[in-house]
Length: 108
Image (cartoon, rainbow, N blue to C red):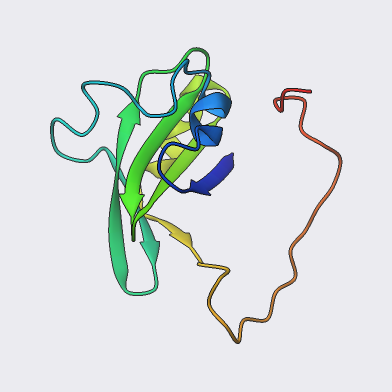
């Protein structure tokens, strides 16, 4: 799973989602949300985005796009329950961010 938070018209999340443009497309958010993330005590809505070979969800959170890109396309079931996330811009957090080998899903 890759999580991307970006400003409007940047297009990084759309690129990892395999989309041509910088946003989710014309029919985005036309119905009820398909998934949610929990940040603090708030649940934030995400909508499914049609993308080739992966499960993609996107939504607007506090003025920024939030993209969740999951491989393979069946991995969207991970979002049946709200996914807890943290805003790393908040001060006073004890961070131990793991890292490892680059994902083969990332374009080079």
